[in-house]
Amino acid sequence: SSRIFSGMQPTSDSLQLGNYLGALTQWVALQEGNEAIYCVVDLHALTVSPDPAVLRDRTRRTAAQYLAAGVDPERSLLFVQSHVPEHAELAWLLSCHTGFGEAGRMTQFKDKSGKQGSEGTTVGLFTYPVLMAADILLYDTNLVPVGEDQRQHLELTRDLAQRLNTRFGAGTVVVPEPHIVKSTAKIYDLQDPTAKMSKSAASPNGLIELLDDPKVIAKRIRSAVTDTEREIRFDPVNKAGISNLLTIYSALTGRSIPELEASFEGRGYGDLKVELAGVVVDWVTPYQERVHGYLADPASLDEILAAGADKARDIAAVTLDRLYERTGLLARR
Ligand code: TYM
Image 1 (cartoon, rainbow, N blue to C red):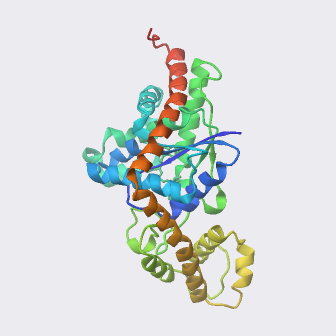
Image 2 (cartoon, protein in one colour):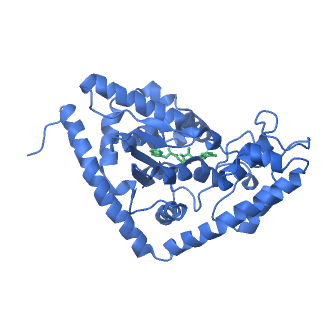
Image 3 (cartoon, rainbow, N blue to C red):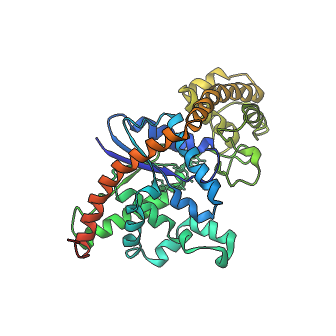
């Protein structure tokens, strides 16, 4: 049995299909036989300076979507990051072991700060990956299920963990491994199949938001950019759009790519899009009903989150005590 930890930012009303296929399906699968801990990382979301009421709403909506996807609070811990203050405390400790240049090399930081300019860029955005490392190391995590875009942050987390073990002795922290499933690690934008699907994409038409009107979702799939050939074949280099559609189809149905290629032999791109739109709508409709069920009862949702936070704190406090002791902070009597 391994300790699993992962989280998502509550930065939009709805998760997008990349979050679901790249991460959330793995979260659900890894609950089986492991100790899984899943978090809504609201402190990370503060880096985009959200409206307070909107952030609160999105935090609940994100938790409701974890549950609707199959995160089971009877088996896994589900909580909100800010409810466990040890995350921020460990982040401070780790920031004192992170090189300024090392943090500056994070590509997500460079992309985001590049867009905002140095005056618009906060220190919080800069230290974002350090807080992420704290999330992970606080639970002696073995495996972190994420999409490809988090790989560099996981490498920083591992570097920090090894550094602490070298400096303060073996066993100070557990060195985590990323769990990145190649086939779905990067779901692409429907309008620009060379870019990852993301809530900050240039055009909304490339994005599948899981809580969007199923009619809009179907239309976006039917309008996906493909290529000028006719053959339905998995070839990410030459046929990025078609390959992305096949990846999504395969992930949602469990049918293999070769099986799909065979079933679409001699058929047109339009057939693939129409069928896939049907698959997505059939899956997303009951998902949306479950999300709205959880959101209709915020008191029960808050209770699940509070119970998760209590249990998470018990684990986090033990780790933080160990690290405070090893790093030379005087124990409180
Ligand atoms: P976030 O909120 O941007 O994304 C949540 C998860 O979705 C994955 N993902 C994708 N996977 C495949 N294809 C895509 N197009 C796609 N878009 C997003 C992300 O890789 C991620 O797994 N820094 C993290 C949140 C975080 C975290 C953590 C994760 C904070 N602390 C500790 C793991 C462990 C983030 O911004 O994810």
